[in-house]
Length: 279
Image 1: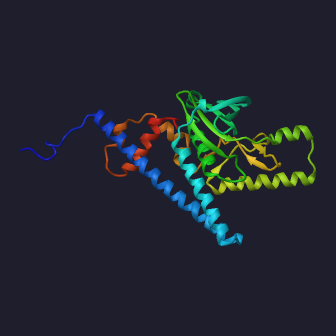
Image 2 (image 1 turned 180 degrees about the vertical axis):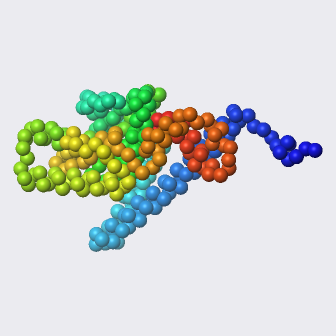
Image 3 (image 1 turned 135 degrees about the horizontal axis):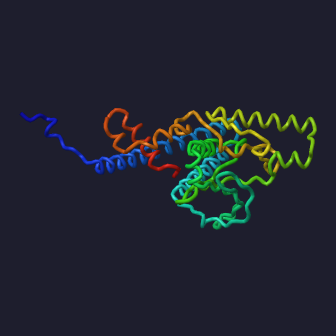
């Protein structure tokens, strides 16, 4: 006597693999759409809140709203455009690290100058730095703040990951200390206070820098502190933990399709594992 179980269709591992990829792609697409819509509403609400406190006339408020709408449109246009190394003119190397280097570059179409951080994927995988790099990317994206170096773009190729960041002409605190030897008490109090505020700002976002030192305290054109180099940063998300990627390295796509329960979490985990460091 046959049962429903006997008549059930058995899918091959390849078919399950393709189905999982399609599921992840669709979930990621719509998740991003929803997140973008929420973020856009939050930015508009933040603008409206600031307009209440500025004491502007209705005409001035409307002008601010129009400027905001134009910026949102430009932001969407930039998100749709695909950037690559060829869109930037290298000027000079301004720093080197364990996984790559930092170059001063100029965007060809606008002429704007940026700092391009280049990270070698193979080195990051070998030394299990994927979680730290993801945390660095995430904190730079989330921390649209006066105390953190801004990141404008990120992209990758088969060899490297590229982070296009704000260039700060003031150098770093280590260079200042070497030049001045000893700072005045007033100057020291100023920089200690700004450093404390900068650290507090990223703690409020749920991140821990873990590498605060004079080399990573950059100075803008007016001499104000900005935190940089989040290469050892960690956050409160699983994707910011090294063991998360180590555990996933042995997983198979079929491991994430066996149970309908919590399928979104499983699909997202498989996606992170399969993409490696293609952030």
